[in-house]
Amino acid sequence: AAVTSPEVVFEENGGNDLVMDIADQVRESVRAYTGALSDARYTPPHQRKIRLVGITTSDENKGRFDPHAEKYSEQIALTCTEDGISYELWRVPEDPHEIESAISRASTTEGVHGVLVLYPIFQRKELLQLDSSAQFGFRRKQNNTIGAEKCQDRGPYKNRLTGVYYKTYDDYFRDIIPPTVDVEGLCQNYNARWMFRKAKWYVDSGRDCNSNENEAVIFPCTALAVARVIESCHWLYNQDAPIGRRLEGSVVTIINRSEILGRPLAAMLANDGATVYSIDIDSVLLFRAGGKMRRCNKLEMTIEKCVRESSVVVTGVPSNMFKLPVEWIQNGSTVINVASELNVDEEALRQVPGIFFVPHVGKVTVALLEHNLVSLHRRYHAISQV
Image (cartoon, rainbow, N blue to C red; front, side):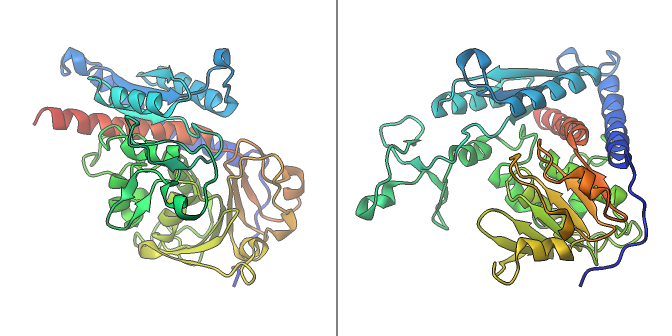
């Protein structure tokens, strides 16, 4: 059953101010670290600069312009410059071999401490297909084969023991970034072991760049940004409760199940006690603590019912055609928009009593990207010195 919230007045700039405060807090810690790193008295010359490489296929001169990737890269470049971090963007052709080669080159270049691929690389989902003559073991699917030949319409193995194959190029690219430079923590070998099992790892992430970094887990920075916003503003978040129970009593609906946002965020919040409904175009999943999840009957658990039960609603639909009906949102809810487009009518939302609305989390996302990079930098040199 829905929990009745205390009476709260809609704050005109409350969400924006909160985002700025969280980002400033994280960036202050980052600048303290990079400032100490640049001190020649304590740091060898080759270790005085943290370096991040971004990889994109967006290139206006080649007719492949991705406005979202370009805007994100600009925000990263500006923030990194201000905070003492070196950022460079590599533009590569929209070809799987070229992209994999760029990831490999960046991951093995001395002095590169983080690699960030600006997804999506391929705008539509493309099925991978085995090709023994291809250098990297896959090629674009050329047609829709059926019958006996259908078994060939698949990419390389993701896990031979389970028989799971990669379905898209982007899924494959995420997994080939080594954990030592994976600034988003998206590679399967890393996040499958840590991200979806223990709440305590995310609760302390993104706070202090100088504490326990050799043990900290790297979480996707957009999902982590939303989690930080929720714990900072949501009235049901109990700072005094034991880790794993701080969101007990909260019901959260996340309209997105991407690897970058929806899926990790659902697991993180569920592991801290929340009941989480994860929604995509095909299904509704219920996440619970310990990595447990089950598919809901869509006839019984509709999107509307999920939202009406929730005290937190997160929208991340990359389309200006999607608008969440405001009448579904209960009084006193926390509503967080992560998509570049507003997924809710802000003017109508103002009429709902007690709403706390966060229209964007971009500044926190970039700040936590820096925090993840600092974590990798500490580990990178610790490993190199062994």
